[in-house]
Image (tube, rainbow, N blue to C red):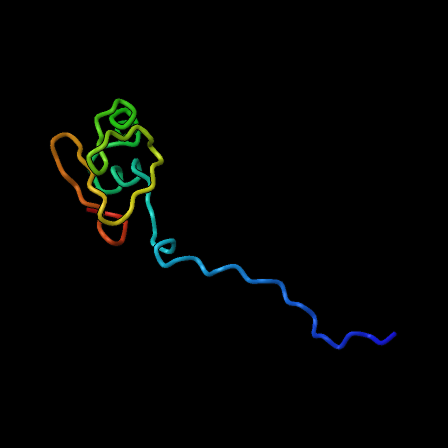
Length: 89
């Protein structure tokens, strides 16, 4: 019997992450705190869990909801658009 001369098979590589996955994201409560829209993290938690915050027109009660650039937050009569950097508005 002769030995095979086929080259070894390399493992398949996974696809590179999409460009949109590389966009920095910030959680809703952190966005409200760092943007100065609420005074404290406790206030952000109270407003979010109380149903007083809307994201893209829908009530959002998850504090850790990850925001994307262009998301529209409605809070206490204000409309805030998440900027491309994901940080302050």
